[in-house]
Image 1 (cartoon, one colour):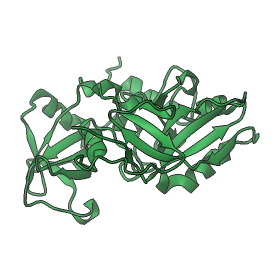
Image 2: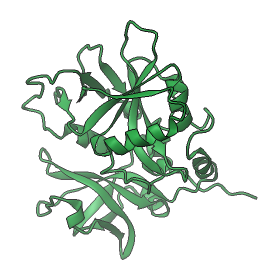
Image 3: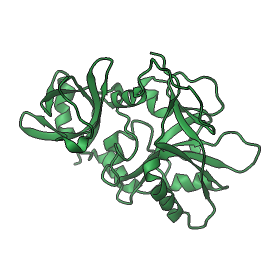
Image 4: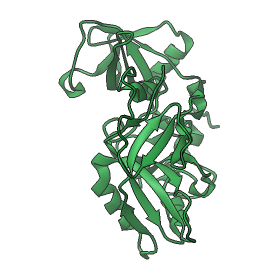
Length: 304
């Protein structure tokens, strides 16, 4: 399938500048910003002091400029724009860092052409897929291949369990490791402290995560919905409620629904052992397909 650039209208880019912008972001975000490389973007998150995800984002070096001023680009969900900037400013006590909304249009491409604004999305490295973000200052014309489904990017994300934005990662309820942030390169335990680090270090080293996001799919020609809030999103294994569907979309090429679900880790072990096992969702038999990077599933560490 040939994919051209796809415009993501719900994504925006914030410029963070100042001589101490890297140190500032490194002290509050989950990723190691000091290790950013040119032409790549890495996942990061701003957490609550209790270690829950407030806002997920993609972070990259600003494009080459003829200036000594350091700056970082943060791609974020449009729906959290004002509260994100307000929260970042709250930690900017010395006012040494500046935040500036940019006029970039955010595009993604699976086969990017050469562009100085093209950034490889490191979240997909484990899946061996070359997804790039492209930031344009002017909205390109006729950039979509008419033979390509408009939801190809979401399909790739769902199949590889890469959630994005506040609609898929509910604010202040989810730990980074529940959404596989550690496996997607979105959290560093080697760089030192960041907001929520202590809580997540205990979760990591003691194996205390209780739920995990996983990719799911099912086929049911009679199933339809316009909003998950309007259906019962619970998933059952026999009579036991084991989780819930977070997001879904229909791939019209194969009439299969793909999505992401949040499932109890204790139940996921059963699916890890038996890949033919199915569970129930809205009258459909739903299957879990673990991406290779998720296996083996984490186990609780026994302490003496």
